[in-house]
Length: 169
Image (cartoon, rainbow, N blue to C red; front, side):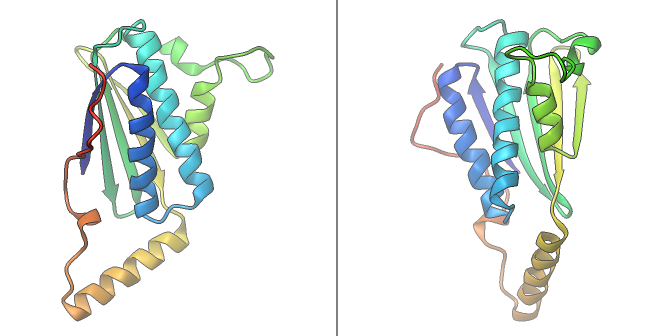
């Protein structure tokens, strides 16, 4: 599992997008799915900054990036104002106007979207199941490693993300 902790400053979103993109590419997801999931995570972070933190740039956001046997899971945590359940629905798609489509995008990018209210803030859990061909190639790789006694590479080991770029505080 990788974990990113960053301030709610919009300048940090580029670093988040890059980390998510690399995480997904390392796991072999197709480029189109990678792009959609990166956009979905970016939209979720933007919603936290706008709605939970009311544009405050110094609040904590945590993103956990997890691999599991059938795909990936992202846990996005904020400690801000919770949205009302009705507002988490998004607007109808047939209303033509700018904005308000982020929730539809998030639901399109991920197979499971779960909002968990916490005593303080919200945990958004986003799950994407890997395509069948990706699961099969992963199983073949694991089988070959077992046969040769090779250890898994660094991408499969638990780590915290380190980057020379300091997040904005």
